[in-house]
Length: 256
Image (cartoon, rainbow, N blue to C red; front, side, top):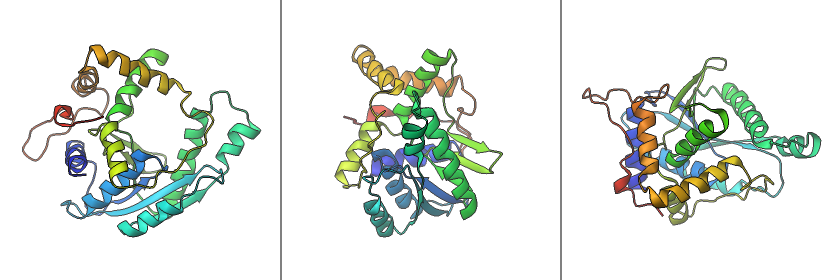
């Protein structure tokens, strides 16, 4: 957790993600990444110089077997207010619409439900669990399937809702988060989605893993290139010493 907090604080400061008085919700899907983010944000709140209010919010996609009671218990232990939004997203996508490419529609519907809830709660920022590996995979997805150099942004202001999305885990690798979820016994929620593991993202993840056997620094170089080009909004802001910092320094991050 110290390693995650170190990477996370550096990312937050590089991109000026948190200001005093922010009311931030962690988007908790129940996966290892969002739970690790929730845990780390609760710890960061204890010492970060800009005080902020922290909430957790889950958009429940509908299946009864998805039990978020352990997540609610974790939030209580961490002193974080928890909001569970019930929806029928899975039923709409798979039973009614029979979507051939359900991931895009699911993401759009979950975003809509979350943003409505955030506005009702008066929350101005939402922290999402996208990490270092997600960013590299998204870059390749955009290149291979859209023919453009693109990726989600570290900080995104949504002018229609007045909500700002932040991604504090961008300097943390997936292996580190997986290890943290196991070590701290975080209550990962089983996802029964039929598309899980059968997506373009999974194909790209496996391709990157194969390429990394021959080019061990591949992900580091791609991530650094996104910052140095930079892609829109990927150039880190100057820190308090007027110095711009680049990259996640993964040589010190022993991932598995």
